[in-house]
Length: 164
View 1 (tube, helix red, strand yellow):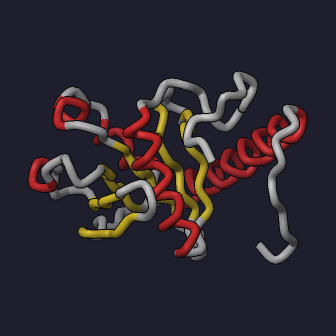
View 2 (spheres, one colour):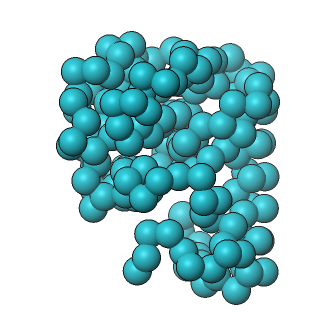
């Protein structure tokens, strides 16, 4: 199965991410699925910032996972503190070739090899305000439903079950 779809009309891949970032994302998404969490990639927040992964846990908490594919990728990112206002927990995710010690201690840390991922540092909790949580929950649901519809219309088979 290709990591990046050859279908130009695939609404699940927007083409901005490197192959390495897509590998990290795939591993993190597998971990999140094992944790019974739902996630949406590339979600634009009300501020205009785009979260690499917006995660909704089984407890109703929101996490944001920022994927960094290289040292340069992290060093060029000055916007990551802005994501704190839009999640209960903020994580960075990368692959084994990027040194762990360069990532800020103020966020959690995930290590991904493309086949899975592991939480190496838990993220500190900073609870969302109830009004923001409600707005984010509505946005998450709408984006998820719209993407599912676009995938169906593009002829991409998506497995669905009633027990989710």
